[in-house]
Image (cartoon, rainbow, N blue to C red; front, side):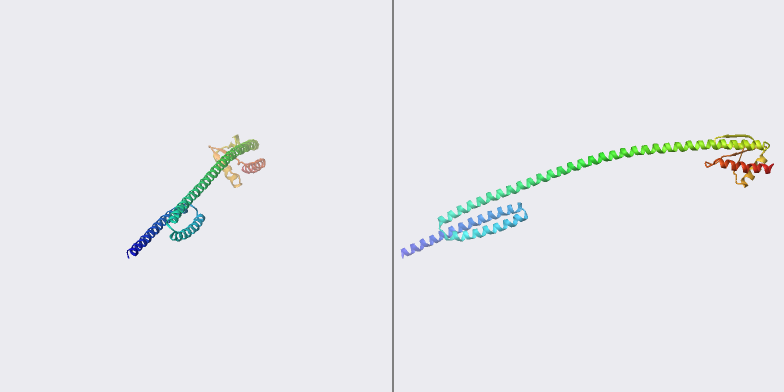
Length: 264
């Protein structure tokens, strides 16, 4: 009986030790799984969408392998369990190293991309600056050309205006001379009605014997289409328009000679 009891106790102790070892293995595996999941999550956050999908698949495969390894470890002896735990730790270290290397590669790629983007931005800024400088130079040259053209146009306009003014002045001088000649001719024909023919510029005038004769002459001339104006006590003055020509002077001479002939 004592032997049986002792054997039973030994069996119980062996079973308890096995259970303790199994519990320890389970705890170790749980810790390992938790650490692996944390590392995988950190890596998944830093990687892109495609890499995240791939990492999920890798994690699923690793988890399947870990479950298989756990089943095998439960069936093995303590020495095998210790060896397996060491192998798992080595695998974890390798995986951590691989993950760290992957993270470093991703970071290097990101840094290279950022540098390339910065270089492109600098190139774009330089090109825009060059284009703006060229545009400013072109605008300045265009403005200078426009200013020169405007100055030339203004000079041409001024010259044309001056030539027109000279022509007008010459024409007015000719008109004045023609009018003076016309009035002198009229005065020579009718000295009893016209005297003191005079003029300055385009203003010409002459005297009549008295105010009543002057007013009658102005009225008769107005009725015949000739506009004359009174000036002073007994003078008549007129100022031709700018379109006055030689034939207008002859027309006036004929009309006014008829008026004086009838008045006489």
